[in-house]
Image (tube, rainbow, N blue to C red):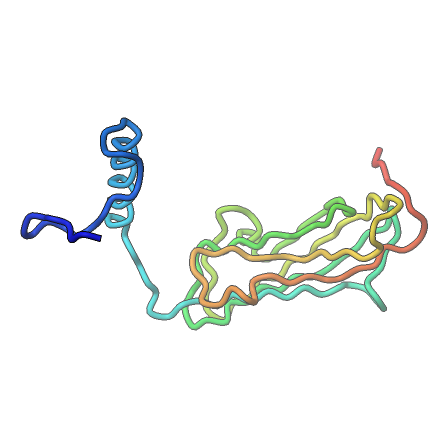
Length: 180
């Protein structure tokens, strides 16, 4: 590749895109400039002490987690900020499988189970109780499913512990529940 000629003091970069003589090239350059400007002009804030959110899910009941069509399933979610800093924009989201219909989600404090969420201090905990009803179990479907929760946040130092689930077994005959 031949060395490029440039004026002293001009930036070193190569445009990769449509031919310089087309209107597509002009749109590409404009979009690139807007994109680079947006990145360069975006305010960057980095917490000195990042947050680490952790989620756990547990079956509420005795024995193996199981239910038949028409029965309710209940599980508890626990969200903890392991710290060392506070977490902002924290939003706990219940994950309901296709075979379940949501009945209720009780969250304490409630702000963390609705968008846009809230600020969770280091060491603080949010608890949620999720109640679902088994609505359908068609023939050919797996008898095993899982329900749980995940958490979203503006910043988290460890994403590996941001979701958890409970594996449940659907028992009894195949069928459907039509609330009415």
